[in-house]
Length: 430
Image 1 (cartoon, rainbow, N blue to C red):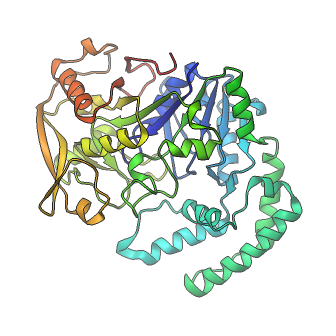
Image 2 (cartoon, one colour):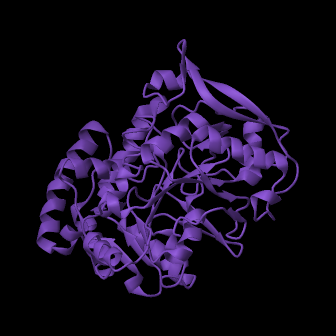
Image 3 (spheres, rainbow, N blue to C red):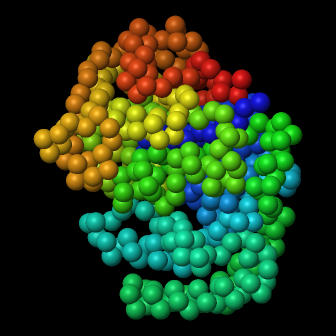
């Protein structure tokens, strides 16, 4: 038996949707453990694209249990929309196949209002938040004033907590952020309606997962965003509001670390980033534009164009170390077809220093100049390759070089968006 965690090894958007969907074939349970609907996982099955924001990617497989863990902050309106959309496509028809942690925190309308207003006031210094209330919801969680689904189930507790929070948030919205105040009655009625629709899914998911793992069920833990967006280990403050690294699996799913046997990091064959923040290998030229166009690099959640650049081995080595990666799934290798020369960033130079390890200093990152290693590219299409030996020789050399530079085994290479367009070198569940 093996339980597998899938973690983004860059700034998110590494193609987790496809890889989780692929690994789900061998799993019994798929668990989302952090983040909110600021994440978007895109899956292409039989040419049909599906974007999921809260529900684990296992929803496209029959008879797979999908669990939303306690570490996720949940907008109930978005969750219900997603459930309905999946059902319209013939998925998730059995209520028993979706479980929502009673300890997960609710995203409230005041979280979204605060998120948008703060970003507006930051002006040029904006962080690049999606405006969906994720950060403010986590703030309330840490401040011990958040509302959990277990509170929503208790009418009295929910009413009292909501009333106190609305009073406080309205003062903040009006006096500090210069925004309109929110109506308690309307919010209360809306969320009571959400309770009626969602209570069938709410459960003690930590206990459930423990019981399933003891029974020998195989569990796949699906991360959102990526290591370089981790609130502790990323490019702070240009990060998300949760722990995207392996430690977030334990706290966000309610399991012990010994229950995880494989930690697979996802990385593109190049690098992208959405929103603000330092990006040492970014290409602000025709090459970067070509990567964006050929790779379809637009945010699954926001539609924003992604910033693109060459492969950053410094960042991926950082992910290998922090997460203890047992393997890497390399995605979008096919996008590099047609480039005569490819570059790999092996170190940074900043302020007279050379950094082989990812620096914590925002100043060092903003001023970082990549130390490049150049390799020859290839022109042959890759989408039909199912073995490494079927790749063009230069593509094979590129994969081998990335593996050596980042110090982790590449166990999978994606050569196209479809499920079947994949070279699987090792199945982490076996």
